[in-house]
Image (cartoon, rainbow, N blue to C red; front, top):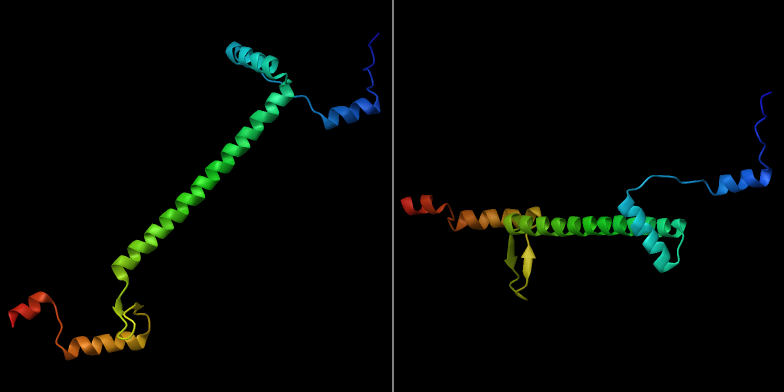
Length: 128
């Protein structure tokens, strides 16, 4: 005669649902270390696992922070290099502070000035 499967009480089913079982195998060395930590700290397997998961979350957070910082540094360095290469500026005749050439009027005035005072390539000027 076949036995009927044993029916769990509803309270047990709720408990199993709320607290699922985690089971895995580890090396003897890791098992011994785990036991030593549990004994020294007075912690359970669940406590040790919680700390381990927390450390991993902290590590992931730090890696993201480092990645974001490196991105910002790279961005700033790229902008600085681009400004060094492409930025055209002149000094204000009143206060002496630097003014960036950005408007079409400024660019047109510079072109006119360069042509009027015969600015050109060094090789072209030296050939005259």
